[in-house]
Length: 245
Image 1 (tube, one colour):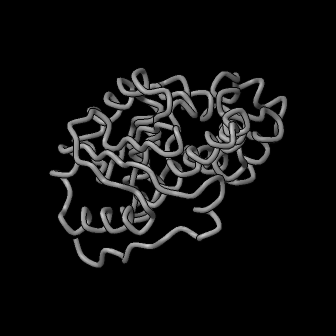
Image 2: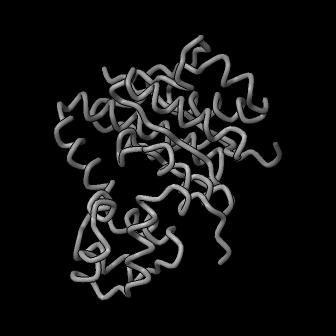
């Protein structure tokens, strides 16, 4: 791997809020051995710069962070392709039953990988927000997200703010930006359509359950687009077939 970015520190104010930063990061031996040494060096330097202690251990997630009394598990998928996607989502399904606080961070630098992820997300029956997926463009950004999530959970634990965190997490899942990104990934659906669906139906789960007739009655979408939405969430042959834009 070339051009691994220099390790950065969190803003001092953020790290000091709620009693300071730091904690313990446990990295899976298996995950470590699958990565390029230069990226492991980046991870180690980043953790040191932000007062985290790194331990290599035989664990089933890729990372477990203990910070401020909070324990958070992470799956960090650094390279998704058609040969690994089934095993990856099977692992997600298994670990979400074992860890109450599980996040899945995945690097999707290309449109092809993003399209593969969207199709597979529905194919393997993922439930929105359970667990939370964090999509990033590169490895360094992915690990920075992991560390910031772990730190934030620790701060909330120290401040006895877990109820507030759950509310924020639910809100994040349904923010217009995320809603828009998921819905416009469906062939033929544009930003205007996504806005109309958001205002009329309000959630991805609601759209998945809505009939063609219900969509047409409550939005200005055409019959063809309403049919596309209805088929996308119900017909695997449709959402897994190749699309030519």
